[in-house]
Image 1 (cartoon, one colour):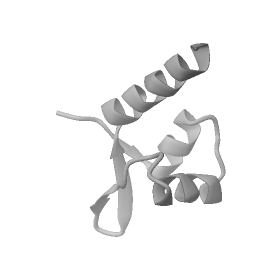
Image 2 (cartoon, helix red, strand yellow; image 1 turned 90 degrees about the vertical axis):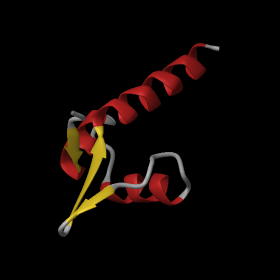
Image 3 (cartoon, one colour; image 1 turned 180 degrees about the horizontal axis):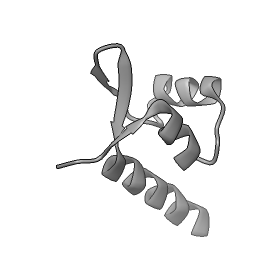
Image 4 (cartoon, one colour; image 1 turned 30 degrees about the vertical axis):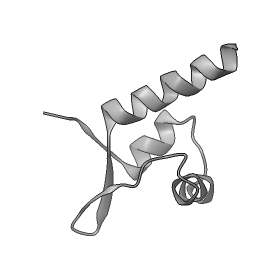
Length: 61
């Protein structure tokens, strides 16, 4: 079963990015759209981990 990240946990995992920066990244497709459960947004941790790995790999080039 996938682990879900809350918006606060997502921001922390992305290096304490601001709320507005995260929402801009979602709008531009840099971060996947959240899973909505009730009034809260969640992201699959493994998807975010792969995104971070991909971005880290691009910075090495």
